[in-house]
Image 1 (cartoon, each protein chain N blue to C red):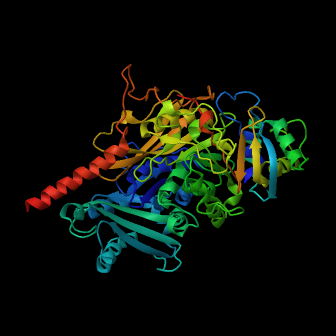
Image 2: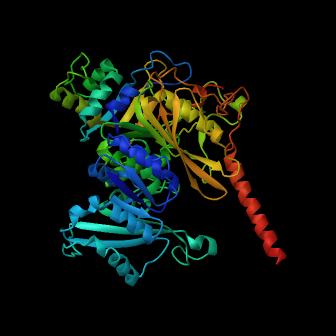
Image 3: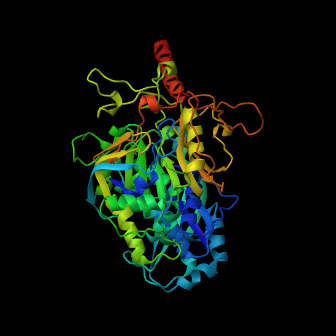
Length: 469
Length: 127
């Protein structure tokens, strides 16, 4: 059955990866047509039956609605030719109650024009009664226009964009997963921080992990727990760690006070799937063995607001090799308020180490899903860390102009866990580059410095522009 | 909430502490029982990843003696056995106390259910 998917108007690069992941979670094969264009709001898919379309609509965050594809055309004339040619699809519905839905992307269609569109289908000669409340059949007429506002500076839907395509279909189901975006709204959460990931993206990430009941997922930079709640919502058992336990606990440090991450999990009714949280540095982690997790999902602190840290002194020559006894006779590190020294964790090192950690800690077939910020002008595909045993599944960019962040999905194809990886402070190659001995330095190295330098440059340009007028 | 499943997966990882570092000894612990979502698939899939004797030992210390000495077979375990395993692994929460390395005696304190597994400065590798 040909299914017309109507997408939400956001996160274009995430559309196809999400469709594929959700199909896999639901246990069926999905082939994306080779001419599919994910930048367009409509896509026609070949699915075994209507049920599979419903499965996608109930789990894909980016699906607005699914319908049975009946016809398409670049103009109204073309469309009508196609509708007539596909009579076999719609003739069976000629006697049922129905209504029309006429809509458009990047354009507003007046109610008079909408009626004209419906009238133009009079030749279908349906004799069922029109029922606006509970029709047995909803026919959808969608027109896609160029975004004229983009060029003219007008708001979306105003101005005269050119008609690109018209679709005619039978409604099956509205996407219901989008309501989760409200449910997991950060502002309504019992506990969150200023770097908590927004709901829509954390839901997309959960779909990329293939979260489902019986799976175990881990976030090694858990922060305030954004990734845990959405993965747990889809049935997974979740665990988080962070080098900074204050992020997990929240403000409460009193005895018997529920940690922040746990209170948010309770708010969502997911405490029964929160395996737990712990304070540690993933580069010095206490996991007894590898091959534990079905997915590792994380938004590492890449330093736009707060940089990543790892254990160790910045100046290694000053790092202590034996415990220190304080004047009161107690060893400093056994005091309850002892905090070991930390040093900045360079993003390129972190990304490389995360992939190496995942190669060991994932179960075979498990997924690593993480965000990697990149400088738009300097990014190259070889920047994505590569490692034997790990395969790139998807790479979707969320574009913020001069920089962007890429949601990377990798799969552990290795069947073994290999040696427990060490994460030395210096000296490991970055990998990537693909072919040869020359070491490739990824463009996101020094991202934080570039980010702030970029701001300064823009400010300077603005100053120069304003002083010259 | 350090559940016994988590306890079964954590080992001491201080520099040079590579043997006799598991299981961590439970010391001065206070325990709470809380229901967890039951998943048969999860349990059957996870049995091969457990250190069974360590689990039985920790469970006994906390007054849970429903587990057999021999590891369950994921293929043949009965629902009753899995329910007992579920309870021990996921419903027994350590809220306060500490986990102590049997080898190097590093004390990992647990407070409000969150274990502090950070190493001290002198326990870090120097590279």
